[in-house]
Amino acid sequence: MEKTMKNYRMPVQASISKQEINMKFSFSTPVPEVLYQDEDILVVIKPAGMPSLPDKLGFMDLQTFLQASFGQSKAIPDISIKLIHKLDRPVGGVIIFSRSETTDKWFDSEIPDRKIQKTYEAIVCGTMPSRQGELIDYIVKSEKTNRARVVPKERKGAKRAALGYEVLQSGYVDGFGDISLLKLTLFTGRHHQIRVQLSNAGCPIFGDGKYNKLFSSAKNKGWYKLALFSSGILFRHPRTGNEMTFCADPFAKEPLAFSTFFPEAPKT
Image (cartoon, rainbow, N blue to C red; front, side, top):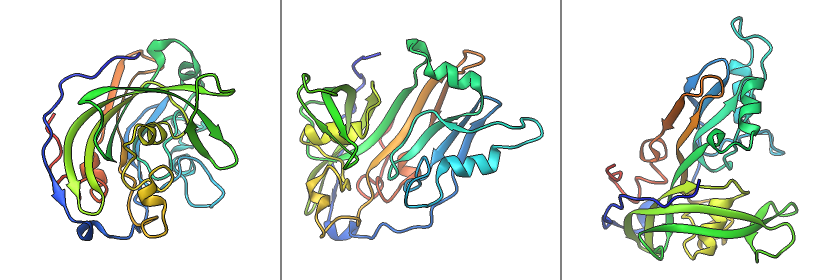
């Protein structure tokens, strides 16, 4: 459901020196926070840095953690926890897991009302072309490099990618230039979609070592957290059909990535 975003908030100017944010990204991965659970779904806040699924590096992933914590119970025996939508490893925020076949079939359906509406917040380098708008591109994924890139629509394997954006605040960081805090609404779900679309628009995400040249060099790579967070989801419950909304504040959950640049979260 592609629709433009409204209620633009005037930017609040912020300024911070590079020295103040020159800190190494190292931490003990916090325990995921469960926002909601029933016999069909688990809604969780994924910590940034924790993989959504098992990967070749062998670190604890969210699905394995949840399966060990919630996979077996007297009330709901022999269930299997399955990922409904994935967040990239460095991205934290709200995510949904299935606990039943009812949920699997519901979200596998092509019926529009059964789709998840996803909202993100991000800090980008640069200034967007307008206060609010949409980005529509066609992207392909390279299995060899695990990266995505924008290509012409006619390119074989190209998939349509669309998102809406709203500028919430703007500021300046010494050594990096202008920055902008964005609210993003995802209309499609492609590999690294938000990261590659914003990079292609000339406003790559702060701290993104894959799609932001400022952070892909040996000088800066790995020293800054990716400023992208899954801040909200809205969907209909697969069994009851009731509309459900869950939110998380990136300024509270990922202060190093967000509060460092904008001390006060934007007022809603």
